[in-house]
Length: 356
Image (cartoon, rainbow, N blue to C red; front, side, top):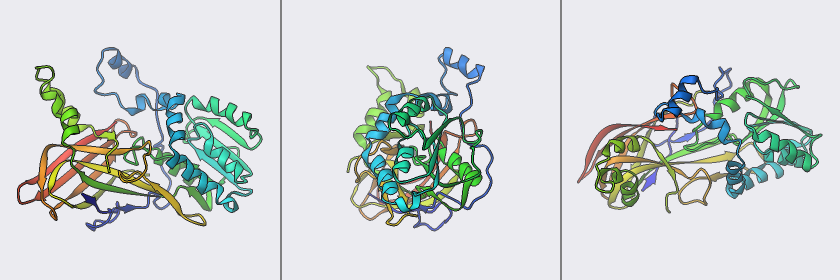
């Protein structure tokens, strides 16, 4: 199956390319993560997880070294940032850099290697305590200042910065909504003509034949050791799966068109993205496509309750709608309007999912 590009601001059926840095405007606090309420804590004690969201785990999860190990070992991700920074020392020489969500400080240290005068790294999770030691152990404590807190709540000891670096992308590109935080930092501190690394992303959607995995993940609930547990099947269908597929306002609504390259069955739709550094001497980027080298972002799979029977050349059209969840902006409510009028299968359906 092949997926065509869509534009979040363009209703033309062919488009998907989306410059994810919209025109500058002031934003409200959209950045993240409040403490759990007593009610939410009681729900955990009672074993009721229906209302638990990513905000309950977001900052705690980034305190653990394991998640940073996975990201650092993702060479597609880390090497691309390294090349984008170190191959463009002329942009960093003598400049002030802000690292949003600095984690272990790897991007801050790349910026120092590229000649930055000073780097301010900000992170809300406990990993920043380890980052302080890492920076000290690498002899960069005079060049890097680390600040623990939310971007929306901290003060920098300077008026503005020349460059913002951040690895803000999540599953389905927008999951966890860290882009809001980067845009807040841009509007508050980035000088006119300043640069954001990276500055552009493109999202794609394709159709997927996945009968075996759909059975294991969805249809499995119909017969579990002889018991009918299909009450859980509906919940499983509503939650997208992040996995590997073989070879200011984050809301958007965009049309798509997918043409079948062979006669087969469509059990799901798969979304992935590309990210690019375009404001550098020689633009570069990476892809999370199923055809590309593995990244820790993998792909996001949206299963259908019933498969579509498609013939070569037939087209599936529709619209994908995405918006932050009302209860927690770090979760995403995603809907697919799917239309297909094929020789052996027809559908006109609205399907809702929640990525959390």
